[in-house]
Length: 150
Image (cartoon, rainbow, N blue to C red; front, top):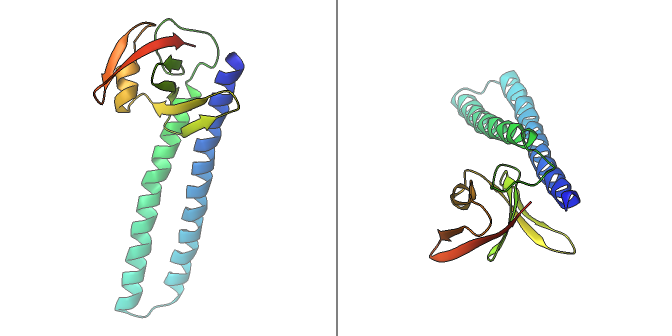
């Protein structure tokens, strides 16, 4: 079962690294646009274009900071070993689905099962943290029972 947790860890790590790469490429493109905008000077139109590029750069900077924070969270995950309580890095099997507490990276599927990679900060992640096998949580008017923790 640890190989599944290792696959999930790789899936989340690759998700975050890919996101960082995409954002960095976009920032590089914007930097180029900013440089070419600087070379031309067409009055108010020039200033408006420059301001829009700068706003986009700031937005991407915030996204990059968030993605780097996600990478820090992933780096703190213990990939092996079972725990009797749900913690960061736990693979949690419930009667309503399977969850890997790490970062919000979407659904992982292999030939055997489907696992939702979620952040501990998500509503269901917060409810699952600290729970033990047999504990129940209520999420969206549904009772969910923790069946297994890996």
